[in-house]
Length: 389
Image 1 (tube, rainbow, N blue to C red):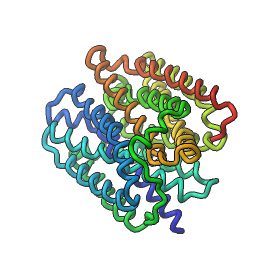
Image 2 (cartoon, rainbow, N blue to C red):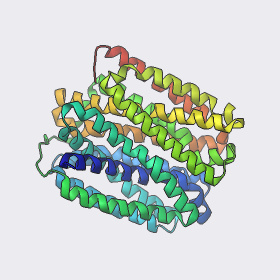
Image 3 (cartoon, helix red, strand yellow):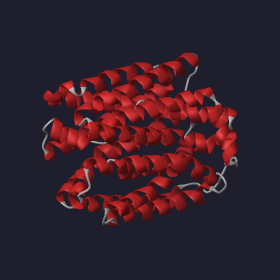
Image 4 (cartoon, one colour):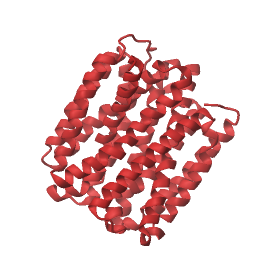
């Protein structure tokens, strides 16, 4: 296997590791509730706080990263992540768990942004979209493998053991990065203010609006996917694990289809995809009485959700490379920053919806964000009809 292929596999493993750490909490919330006695609605804020810290600190830490050699700062951030995830595995109470999640959230966005820069720089031009889509697919692979295995470990042994699994993966990833990441650096140094000049561009603002809306729509239901499947649809724990596996497959299909769209002018196609997603979110509650049809609808929603990644990521990087070279680190992290703003917004909305109205209404609230995603995609397509990303 060539060094480039090993690097590509390693970058996907980084995304897989980060995805397991971030998303696995969703599958083990009921088990944490059983141990700590904390209400499920309150535990939902673990997702909200993680995403909020992620979004707040990622631009700061990516700017700090631009002042150092990427190889060195990536290893430092990985070491902090390893400590934070191990703390999560050891947490004995809600506040200890929350603080450990804050620590891992603080560096997760900077890690993936550095990896995406390296992936875009190391890949031949004609393979960039494919590699970037595979890195995003690493998060989906975390859903297809990491979340079901984490949930199975949690229900069989303990939710603590699920995070010990992530610690083992993180250790291997840290060693791999130390051996395979190039030490040469071509970063353009820039202050925090200079980095943020990118956000004056209307193309960027429309793109991040799309990302926020899509991810908020996802997490209105995904935060409580396990109780939705078990309580509202009546699936057993064993069946639930297989359904989560199928959802992961759907995310991978969406990511790879998103890579294809990125090569074919993907921004232009996104309004149709998110209109479909909105309609399916509206159908979620009426289909509770037809659980397998509801599972199919959720799988199609997962495909649609994942389609934006490669198109928006390459658009952000291309705009930065041409017009804002000092902002490349920030541009590489926009997807992850604003995805987590969307996750925070969606999970907060979900917690409030569950607390006041119950699980039944989360799909309808998600559809509101779906409408916003359609509008953002339409404006973006209208502005860039001739653009190819």
